[in-house]
Length: 217
Ligand code: HEC
Ligand code: HEC
Image (cartoon, rainbow, N blue to C red; front, side):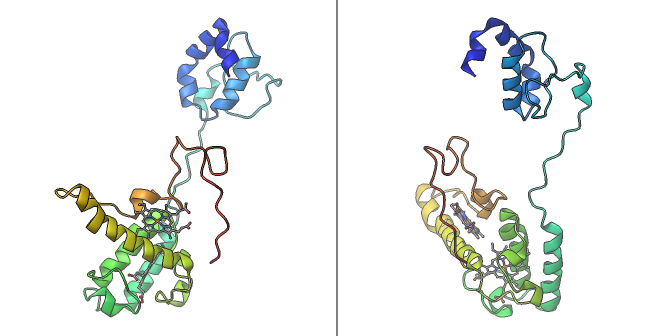
């Protein structure tokens, strides 16, 4: 990489290609390419083609290139809707009663109506992690949401306590007025695990967090 910038012609090429480079997600492949081809810049192809198989594509053809859209992060929406409908049917007529009375095993999420709890499960818990209900409710297909068999359900309950503590105890110490509020999505961002910061090397890489031991359910 450093070599590329010592060559003036190469630097010029890089600058001419800047807009393309910005758009290209396979920027590493392009970089390798420009090192090995000092003559007029060929169109950087978004493929991993080896540098010695020179592409014959005329410049400009890449403009029609179809870029695959990123897969939606929360692909579970439709699957969850089935469970939501199932629960709403089970509790029909009791939607506006206290969740802890309608359901059997509500230990932390008190003060919500039954309907609000189901809504929170879908739009907060599951959506924050891009999970299906079954990730935490193993027996959801059998209509059992009360069981605590899943370690992830127990972890989620702990997370709720932790979140309550942040919102009700910790953050008010720092911001007594206009206290900011955290939710599951503040950390999870629609992923299974909170994202590593771009500044932190990957797990297991030098300087990065250690690889996690496998979790037992
Ligand atoms: C990340 C884990 C997680 C996901 C995903 C999740 N839940 Fe839950 N769910 C919980 C936890 C934890 C509780 C218990 C909360 C408490 O103890 O206050 C719970 C409780 C419930 C209850 C009350 C059950 C009872 O009888 O006590 C229902 C109903 C429920 N969830 C439905 C759903 C539905 C429907 C979905 C999918 C749309 C879903 N959950 C997704 C973790 C989850
Ligand atoms: C302050 C940040 C933060 C908040 C807020 C938070 N979490 Fe977490 N959560 C974490 C971290 C960190 C982990 C451990 C992830 C790892 O293993 O890297 C975790 C792990 C989990 C796990 C276990 C997943 C796994 O892969 O081990 C579940 C389930 C979970 N959180 C659910 C929730 C839910 C539901 C909420 C909202 C009630 C929530 N979290 C709020 C930071 C947070």
